[in-house]
Length: 341
Image 1 (cartoon, rainbow, N blue to C red):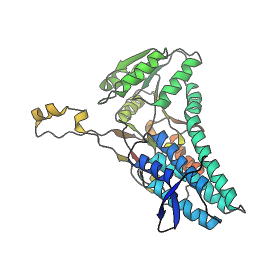
Image 2: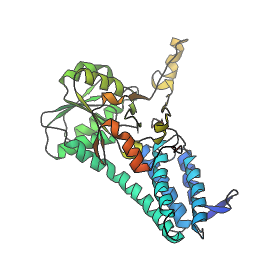
Image 3: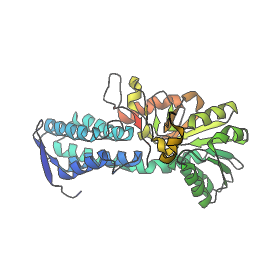
Image 4: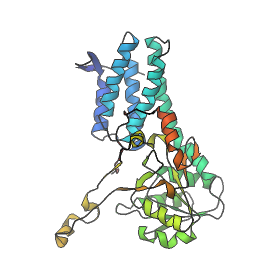
């Protein structure tokens, strides 16, 4: 990477903070960088910036500076699970390697490789998930999907690329109608699609063969946080004995939920439901607009990750193997999902 300039000494550690790292952290904090995948890759970029410019002369000094850079990035969006997981991915490998007989230059190089590996795996995740997920689609299937999940769309497109013939029901996904974007993208790909209102999901479910949706967070017990309405669709699917598949990159698995931390659900502006000019006509009425809901593990048949298809109950194994979580580890960060504009 190109050399970076420095600014702002960190008083508690006495080393200089790369200027570009400070800018990147501010971009994440101010939400100029947003979206789970983009935030995660930006966090890995930040640690790569640190490693490529660190002037630490020994391992203890390097780890001390690494921890400060880690904390700086984590505190930009402490509730964003993808950011915390990206940072933990790099930290786990760096700290583990620091206990071996490496010199500081070798450890710097290892941190850079770990950051690059995370970014590469993030970019590869959707492609792999699409390949695994497409295997579950058969000729003649009728599939229901919800919202505008890039993973779910990738699965459907890959199945189409393989020559499979199937149809899709796409929910509108009120109040922001992201499902209309999904329907348009599927139609453009040559996939027969029917757009339906959210409340019609149960009406059509007996005709459906499979439900395929994405996710924003996967908890330690295999529950899935996704766009509001997902849980209702999964419940209708269980009633109709329809299988539910969830596409989820492993950086969406939340370590904090291992410790019993609850996932915070973003409450969106009421104007998304009723325009401001119409609010005066219904004075005294409270409006709730949660962006997401939680689908319990027992309503999900399988989670499709880039590492393969797993039962929801195996989510804890992903957290332990991918992010180094272990009993007594409380450095997971909180889990929160936020709607993108």
